[in-house]
Image 1: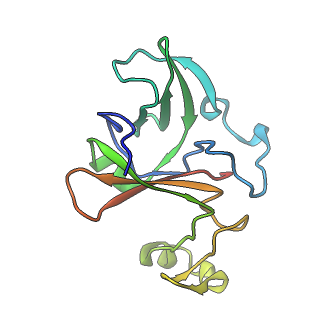
Image 2: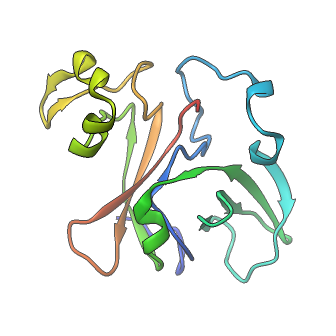
Length: 160
C-alpha cells in the first residue's frame, strides 16, 4: 500500500467522474465543446503546503487538484458522490486498477432500472466488465480511509 502524501485528501472524496487522466479513458470521447470550460483540465496557480504528488479534492467546488511544484496544480472538474461531502481526512492508495469492473449499487439500479439489461455475472456479482463500455473508464484508484477498516473511496476516469 503506497501513500500519496501525509494529507492525501483534504476534503471530500467519493469523487465520481474524476477525469483524473490516469493514462486516459478509452471509452467514447466526449467533445470538448460539451464540457463546461470551468471544468476542463487546466494548469492553475494553487497555493498549498501539500507536497508535489498530493491529490486534493474540493467537493464543494467540484474540483480535484494534483499538486505540482512551484505553487502550481493540474485541476480537473469532477462530480462528487454523496459520501464525498460527508468525509474529510487522509487516505492512502490501496490499489490501482486498469479497466475496473463496475458493480452498480441497489440505489443506482432503483433509479436506473434500464441498466439491469446490460449487466453480466462477474466474480463480484452482477456488473459491467471493465472495458470501453464500463462507466468507470480505463483507470481507477481505490483509497483506503484511515478511520475505517475495509472502506474505500474510488477515483476514476471517464468521459462524462
